Image (cartoon, rainbow, N blue to C red; front, side, top):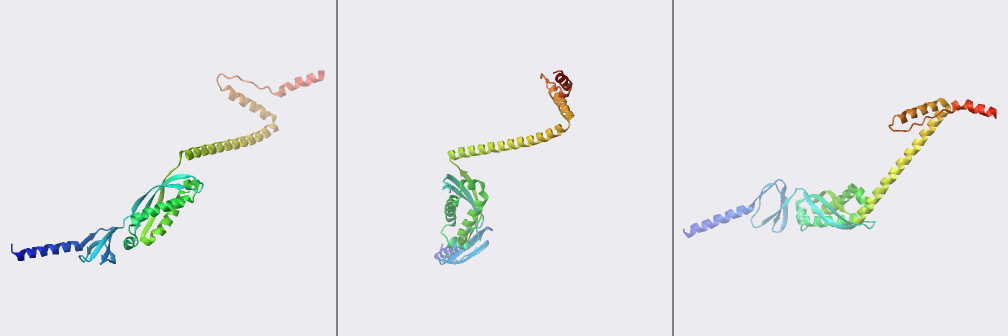
Length: 254
């Protein structure tokens, strides 16, 4: 091969390499942050992107929601209870240029910010509040983290406290507290039932005292109920009115 042909081949290969380095294709969820000689030019995409070889450099950024798992953090609550709390953070990049220029590594920075904020906010809450008002704490965490990541072009959409690991001693104490609370409710309900029953019995006694015959009917009804049981001893009540003539005669004889 003559020297001219070799030079032409080298030039063609070099041109093809330049073209290959100048063409970029970005997906729908990707954006390209373009730097020209170190200066930020623009954020482009999706689709076909043309770059100036050697002069331009592009950094790709994904706009999809990122699920960040916050590892368990040792937290001391306001009432001095030591717990381990883990959480999950959902966020996405809304401004790709800020995410690259304003912070060195937005994923690592968001992770560290989430951990420190989690310890700070939960340390200001009591254990009962942490267990009962989970939605309130989640919203508070989301607002604080989102406010601090906004200059980085990041939007935090959701923060959820995932797991709260209590010490064994605290779990036993809470179990005793729950058992005592259940017993208290049971005693209150039983007392209320006795009070209502006594009120009804008092009303029934007033009705029976008006007509003595109603008391005899009640005796007969009770006898019917007792006789329905097997192997039972039946006590038949004798009306006092039947014995009254004999009692009066005995009094006259004296």
